[in-house]
Length: 71
Image 1 (cartoon, rainbow, N blue to C red):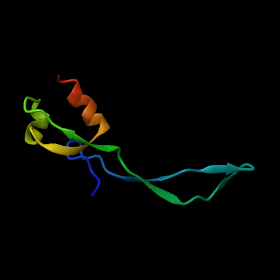
Image 2 (image 1 turned 135 degrees about the vertical axis):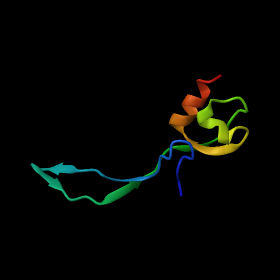
Image 3 (image 1 turned 90 degrees about the vertical axis):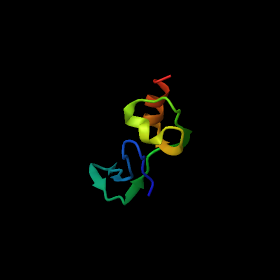
């Protein structure tokens, strides 16, 4: 499953409503996935990331950003 192992962010079902002449057009649902990217977690990290220390994981960009702030 496409899910971030750190924050458990996963896909959601979303719908874009198109307005046409004052009425909303029925539109199909679309699955939106999180922006997961490969990252190597350094050995010296906060307790939140300890179980992933030294591993290469697929993490969401929000978690990658918080990892970079530790340096």
